[in-house]
Image 1 (spheres, one colour):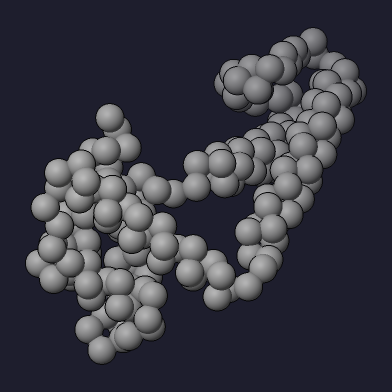
Image 2 (cartoon, one colour):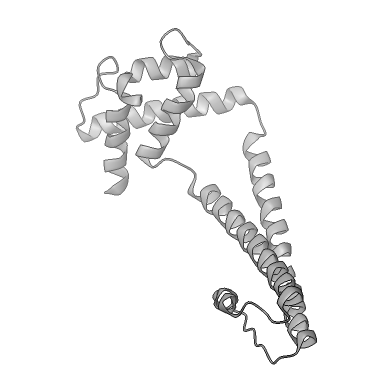
Length: 185
């Protein structure tokens, strides 16, 4: 979609709120495409969100695997042994010694050791929320001015390097690829 709009149309919608050419919904899509292609996304936040998702998935997956092993043991009087390799992926070694109580204690031990990841998740979530609060503090007007200023500086820098940019002809897609090329160099 960002290939259909010029830099001028994009700037008018983004910085002046003009929605006669680009609607608000389309602006969000175009802006996301622009950021993704140019590689301008916030890597720090991206990494934090990724780690939060990893921790959350780990916690839920291990918890579910423990529940399933417990249910299988109650139903069949032995654990589901092929699932032992799953636990190895997370650094746990399960053994079946024909002793239900011993096996349940092993599962309880895993559950207890997993609590550190719950704690890590809470810490990382708080960090992420705090970072987002810090970024959203301050006047939004100043933030808009900073973004506009940064955008214009980028256009000027690309022009000085030798890119031929016409705000009325160059598309947002072309601009994103120009930025990406410079970022990669």
